[in-house]
Image 1 (tube, one colour):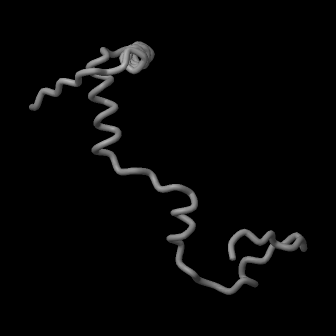
Image 2 (image 1 turned 30 degrees about the vertical axis):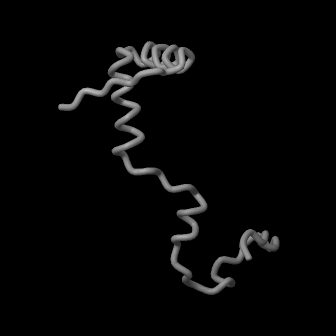
Length: 77
């Protein structure tokens, strides 16, 4: 396993890391590892807009008409 040394970290960042670690009940070093893992190894969550854009274009507009008689709001062009 590798060792990382981070130099010249602003005091405000170091204090925020310590406070965050304290809230999670772990050491600052463990919190630092957790943050690195979350940012670098876990897949990024897609935004709602990205998910909508990936939906297949199926059906006709009438298939998705509102049942209460109100006109549908235009969201996308």
